[in-house]
Length: 204
View 1 (cartoon, rainbow, N blue to C red):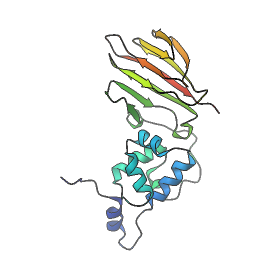
View 2: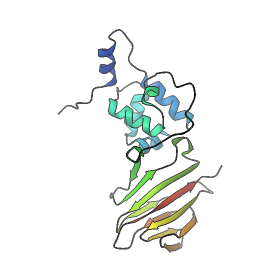
View 3: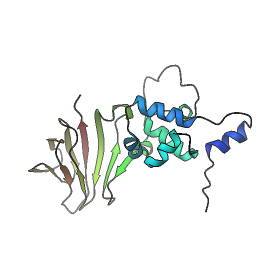
View 4: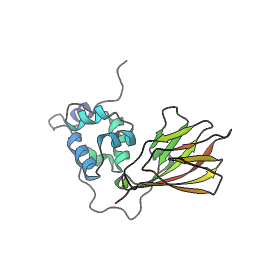
């Protein structure tokens, strides 16, 4: 069954038949590059495939309104900015992100969820997440760049952290600070869910 989400091209045509459709691809590429994000990174943040992002940037695909909305949220910009409208003259003094608007990442088995709390412009420099791990879940990571470190504080339940050959079990209120430039993992070996805060610091 065909998708019911209208493409931006068809929506624009109905609103202004003689106007050129919004240049979403050019705006998307400029915003992504200004934030030093790779296609892979933006794909994970927005939940949009890398191939689709590439096609949008090269004007080979017309994204639906739903896809543009997800990209705007991942990039932390108003929807109008991706549609080519002029940006506001000045940024507001305070930003607000509702709970349902915070993007999240899930492990392949669905047992680990990372809610992205940090602003998109700090991705690759300083990141922080709300982490939830179901019983038996494991968030396994390959080595990040040299000098990268992670800081995990358990809020509820218990989590086991390993980095290289070292392993530490954490209870609520306890924090582990460890090298992330080697293979590392966060596991829930208990019988109840666990949650915590994960901060990733990349070298300057």
